[in-house]
Amino acid sequence: MKAVTTDLHKGHDPKRFILRGKFAQGEERPERATRLEQGLKAGKHEIVASQKFGQGPRLAVHSVDYLRFMEEAAEEWKTLKDASDEVLGNVHPVRGFGTMPQSITGRAGWFMQDMACGIGPDTWKAVASATDVAVTAAELVIEGERAAYALCRPPGHHAYRDLAGGHCFLNNTAIAAAHLRSVHERVAILDIDIHHGNGTQAIFYDRSDVLTVSVHADPARFYPFFWGYTHERGERDGEGFNVNLPIPVGSGDNVYVAAIESSVATIRAYAPEVLVIALGLDASADDPFGGAKVTADGFRRAGEVIARIGLPTLFTQEGGYLSDQLGPNLTAVLGGFEATA
Ligand SMILES: [Zn+2]
Image (cartoon, rainbow, N blue to C red; front, side, top):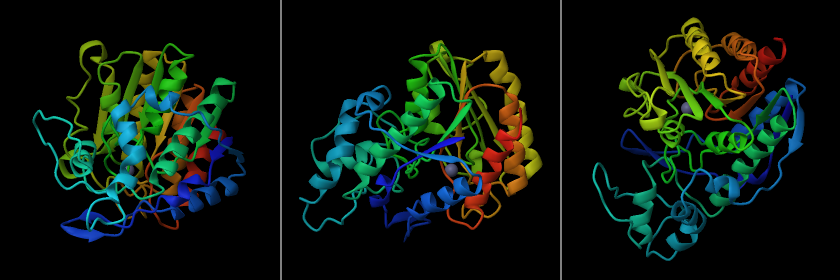
């Protein structure tokens, strides 16, 4: 299938986030995209350069204030005395009302959910390029491709309308879905990253025109902890149009693939015209986050199940971190899809 990539992501190379109380090196590194591209080449997919779409598609999902913050934060941060070269909020308005402040320290906390999303000098360029990759691939599906793949980096599914979190800044999957929604009545999103797609869920939570389904490790013991439970089913117009399918941490191929299978009836009943797969590969047995012990064969089977849904399909890259299996797992899931009529 056609696979959209860009080199513009490379300048985003966050050096630190807080893990178990310590500064750790970020897991979301440029090398991820290199490995994923190797996986695309191994699968003989046709690499396509991304196009630029400007702020329009981003504004369909994110707030003006948040986009301005993302674009300006790194420059403004530099004016602080003794500041690091990465914006990292350290004071947050948790569980209550508040007012968006003027100060960059205050706005960093206002717009960042956790300390896994440092903003460096070239982060905005990368983040903006990832949304362009997603929209370029969505356009391919609109033009009639059976499927397309978007190599989005950084990932996006933990990003809310106006909140970064979990290595995510702008929600590439949601932006692509909103773009597809401009030509289709109903869009379904199936998120198979091992972490719950909390940002995507929140963006469409009160809407019935985009179905959101997520298969992920049980958040009782896994990031993002506060969301991803089965009782979260949407609200107002969106009630019944959000489905969470948590699986036990470390459960392996059969449980993971069965959870994806179990989403098929829900997706078919919704009768969408197009499907977006938020394709995290961090359920892998070799992934540093070690979520579900899934093998390449498990990913191939996941691709087969997705193909049997029988819809035009857009794959947007979400998580999946450095291991020797990262590229081969991408080859496996896309190969499983393509081999299935
Ligand atoms: Zn993930």
